Image 1: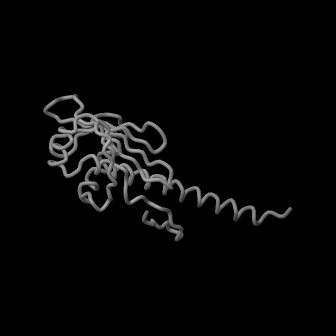
Image 2: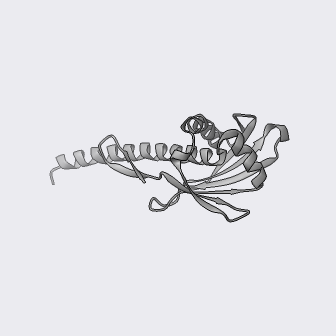
Image 3: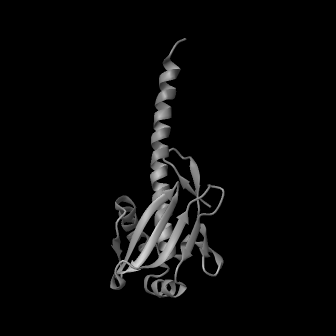
Length: 164
């Protein structure tokens, strides 16, 4: 875990690794954030956000598309397809942030061959999408935490002036 600093200096752990599980084989590896291309994650972040917000198919680089749906708290289901095959899903994946004391989990299923083809073209697309989602989730929840912290500070200031 690496520490991310809030504006007031408080730190919160941000995972720098995730469990990467291939459903068909059961193969599991630990993937590090530094092993994926920052530029690709940066490029995918707004596309993943749009897919989450709209629930629609969103085009991504190299003629691929994604559909994404938040299923549970901090869990995202993603379908990946190629524009040449229409609406056919080539790869399905689920990313789960999970409890802060555990590593996030990426489960990938359907078509290991298709995944290898996509990975070779887009440099670990499944992991890049997973990291884009995890970073979006952290950014959103950090902002919510900062708002809550500001509200609590205002409440504390108010109650400190009340005379009983």
